[in-house]
Length: 481
Ligand code: NAD
Image (cartoon, rainbow, N blue to C red; front, side, top):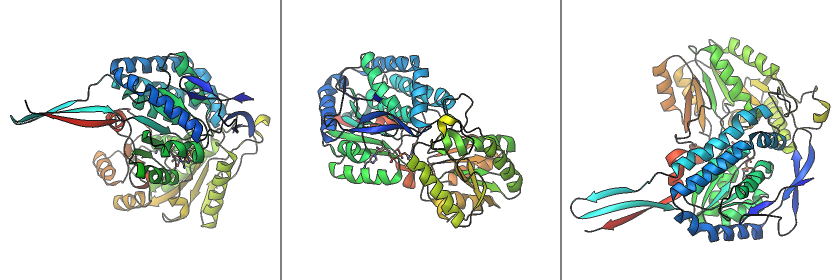
């Protein structure tokens, strides 16, 4: 069995308690390794290592920090195939997806913020003849980073890259369900000479290791991506310490197909946005809203294509749908679909586990792509995040009705709109309560734009300058000449 270790102070270290958690391969349901069950003592060691590294890293300057991040990006890129395989085994995602999305994006994250490290963000504001205000931005302090399992290396690097670029040492806790690529990143960071203590990666459960990071008095900022309930708990723990907190949380995103849409493009986009990564992307469009005049034809095609997605061994190049991340998550998805049936929903396809899996995958955590019709917007199935390969389809008559339907949940992360009418697209986009609205596309990302959610989908924004602002504190120096 492979043991994963913590990265603390530039060394690979076992948990002080010698307690471990099993690492399960979702495709087979079998344990294939173990990871540290770190606790407050391990987290404290990581924070001490970060404290020791803090001043030197901040004083190094943006150019040198950028050079370190580029070196890390190059080293990750050189190991792309190894990391894609690790991600696929650890998470259950198709290796083709890990090769084309997860690992390339992790490299891009590191490169993007390596370049961002060079920019001097100081501002000068003159108060008439009386004074000169210089606003400088200084590192916020030790950054606590907590990330989920769905895009493990992609989302971890999305946080640690800006934190490091801005001059902060990091204490990161990846999801206990998918620790492998984070652990490898820790090793790679040592191999490519990142100063000890600058990047510390502590493995373990959220309730113990995660809480210890959030509660640690020397950690100044928490950047979290995960579920809305966890985000609420983190907010409550961090508030008495007056920490800066950025929360990227759940979604129940609408995917709107207007009568004038390019239906082929909308269908291809909807298959991706519904089922990519087995629907386990916070940005997936889990509520498909179709204009009444196109409803029947569009839903028929959606069901047809969803049923044809190739489910199989994530390590098979041709697999389009891999395994769900855990047995508990598969069971939660099953229960959600049963609840949808109880609510009166009609399961048009899927709604169960596949029966034609390869031998190796017989005990894996699979679920068929599922489309459910006939539920009102206030049904639990349309309100609660399922975070799996399950979408509902609903019909609308006009723009105002679909805007109301789109906004009728507590979430507000993203939306997609498919229409050829640019005026309508802009009007509807402006009315939708969400951090991102895609028109005639989905998951088209520019790393410079603000990324995040409104309502229960989050607080704050990541990406580009927003991330650099989060990981720095402005200081005004007011000088009278
Ligand atoms: P989760 O909230 O269960 O766990 C996320 C991370 O938080 C894990 O590392 C976990 O160990 C840790 N954690 C759990 N309890 C904690 C606590 N009390 N204190 C500190 N840390 C704790 O989420 P998940 O199941 O890993 O991920 C799925 C969720 O993430 C979905 O709701 C999804 O929508 C959301 N998500 C959001 C975005 C976004 O950008 N908005 C991106 C990806 C995933």
